[in-house]
Amino acid sequence: MTRRSRAAVHAGRLFSARLTLMRIVLILAVLLVLLFALGHDAMAKPPARDKRPPLSTKAEIDLARYMGRWWVIANIPYFAEKGKVESADVYALRADGRIDNTFVYRKDFDHAVKDMKGLAEVVPGTNNAQWRIAFLGGLVKVDYLVLEVAPDYSWALIGHPKRKLGWIFAREQDMGDEQYQLLLAKMEGYGYDTTQFRRVPQKAEQQGQPGFQ
Image: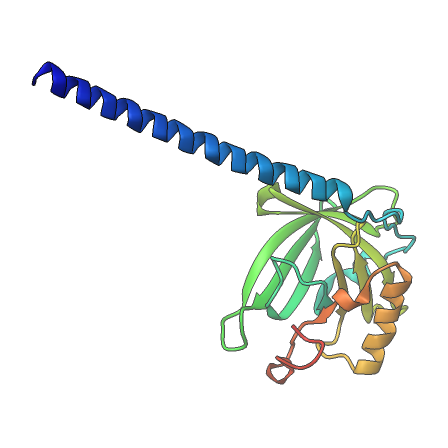
């Protein structure tokens, strides 16, 4: 290779390096502009904060009566339960005072029954109304508030301190619209936006109906 050709190769490499550097600088400049724009928008429109105090409960729960199967009549859909049908929570009191929590469900009515197991601990001094439930060996933990139960333990209202989760349970698999609306009104009284609730199909004919998941 002659001196002239070596110089040409060197010049080409230098030009390519400069071009690459210019591209990097241009990309960084675009990113900075985007970050500034997003930051400015975030400062101009701060997210609305929930100024309400965390939800609490004053319910007094008889654990022995509360155990057993509760059908999930409605909930605020979230990743673990969204789209599930014929779902229920089954509770069993252990000798050590903790509670086995088995969530049973189907992905669809023609699918087999599956389950998800958790372990609940009652928070001391809460009249058995506040639990902490651990799933997946403790990787996922959920605060569980029993807000209210029927005198005969035929239905229960379950909440979460931040109101991001909520459930309506019943001992019977089906619930009439009038009873359901009464319980929704109770949830509204606990500060919930009840438009977030969706009924869980317990029968195939309920799928796709207004108000159902």
